[in-house]
Each structure stands twice: as structure tokens, then as C-alpha cells.
Length: 397
Image 1: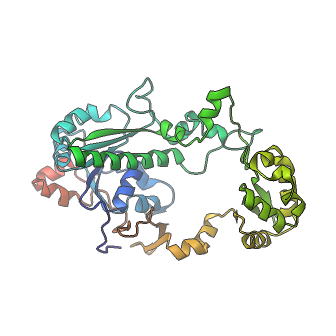
Image 2: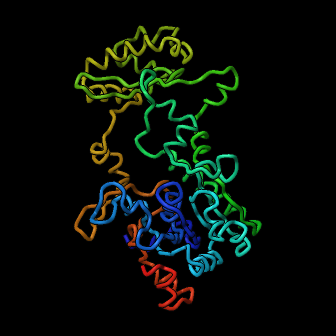
Image 3: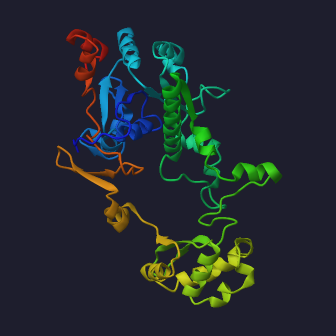
């Protein structure tokens, strides 16, 4: 940490506004790959993420991770002078990221019309629940609601129980990643033409975009995909099975040759050579029969025994890792997928390394999530503000 690595986005200046995940995670990805990300936060309160989940004193461990490499600037955007500071920052910025409810920036006289007039090459990433247009544009949006509206939540769980969530705010993260993709495309356009644009990302459409064949299947004959628990309908065998020692084995043996190797490995050559199961359509039609066979085999061996047998047969399989097992995973360790830092409090901080891996210009961690307003003086003095004005626009932070 604190090394001289920069990344492929060195020289790109990003102004990040908003809070929590959907906008700030996009800023996090850009920061990890070298962009200068100036995070605007309300004085004294800061981003609510600073207080979410497990804490190191008064700061969330999550904050340290998601806000790595960012600069924190406390600005009271209800103050006209602070709004002027934001406009001055935009003059030299390449990107502005925000995830307020649509219309919020316009109330502060900081909407697209104003900011694009200041900087015609500006790329403005706007992440919201429902998008910047349409009858629901003004409604507040959160990942749980977007996952429900976009059709994803309906698919998760078992058919005889209420739908469940994925365990993380996947709708927010999807929107962030689509936002980064859109931002990079818009930056390319600005580089070629000198013309900036708005990147309009909604949580509901980000969820909808990853629902695979859900829409085409319904469109052709009204098929409504239902919850199926751990199985993968129409693709077999692909399911989760309980082993002799009470662990769970995930199998993905839906390729024709993989299926044959699997059946030979569990001493069922008769099934491997059965013409009914030569291709996926036949296997899918008999998925219950195959699940019974595989479930019976899994129940006769421990998880480690099952994985040894399947590894030798080159059949994709795994146990289901808790975070404790993720920490000990040899592949993650070999690739340095989890970074370790010691906080000033003496607490050990672990967090995922930057993804994706670039061979020439990899992402890196330069510093952990900053204190609120840590970079006020650096940024505001560079704009020519004196101490009195710095105190005013930063709300005394």
C-alpha cells in the first residue's frame, strides 16, 4: 500500500457523489485502476456506509475496502458557495458519478444541463432505481426492490417457500458494473469526438439484463420460470447433493463428455452408455432419475472423497464455501485474491483484491478508505479557496 503503481486510468479525474453502493462501487472500481476519485460527502455525517456492519471504532470495515484510493471532500451542497466549488471541480473532471434520486442535483442547480455547459466532454454516470425517465423515475430505489421488480427475486429459493435474497445487494453491484462499462464507452466517445454524455443506469434494468432466457421464453409461449431450489431446469445434471458427512456437493456435469466421465467415476457405466442420456435434452427429461442416482452416490461418500473422485475424472465440482473456507482456499491464496492490511487500531483488515487482473496495468490499493474530509485542504486550496471559505463550504468539517 502506498506504492507507485497507478493503473490504466491514471489521469482520469472522477467526481463521485451519492452514497452506499450503486454509485460508490462504480467509483471504487475506477479508483482501483488509477483514476483520481474525489468523493463528495456531507459534512459531519459522511456516507452512511461509514457506519454499516462491523466497525473499527467509528469506521466500517466495509468503508475501508470500498473507498480505497478515494479522496474525501466534505461539501455542504445546500450552500451556494459549495455548489460553486462543485462546478469548479467539474471544469477539470472527466467523469461525474451520482446515485441520488432523479431531480436531486437539479434542485442544487447541478443538473446535466448546467454541468455539461461547463464541461462539454463530461461523462455523467447517473445510477438510480428506475432510470432517469418513465413514470417511476422519481421513486426511491433500492437493490432489494429492483431485484423483485426485475424478476430475479422470483427465481431464488424453493417453489413451496417465499422467495429469498441472494445474500448480497447484487442489484446495486450489477448497476455499478454496468455503470463502469457505460462510463468507459462514453469516455472513448468523448476522446474521439470531444462530446460528453449521460450514462443512465437503472437498478431494475441491470437486474433484468442478467435474467438469461427469462424474457425470450415468456415472449414465445408465456412460459414463466419458477423457483427450483438448487437445480438448473433444462440442464442436467446440475444440482447440489448432501454427502455422508453432512456437507453439500455442487455438481455441474451437463456437458456430454463430462457426464460420461462422471458416470464412469461413480461406477455407473450403464448410465454413461445409455443412449437416452447421450445429450442434454435426454438428460433434462430424466433429471429426477439422475438426481436420485447422484444423490444416492453422494450420500455414500464424504465431501472430500467425492471431490477426490471427481477431480480425477475432471468433473467440475465443489463444496459450498463459507467465508472461513474462502480464506483458506489454495487458489485464492496462490493468486493473492485477498489483501491484508493492519489498521492503526492494530486490527487486521482483509479485503478482495482488484478485479479484473490486467497483465500490464493491474489495479492496486494505494490507501484505505479515508477519513471524512481528509482531503479538504488539498483539493480546496488547489481551487484557490482561503481558510475562511474552506470552513464555510465544508460545513466546518
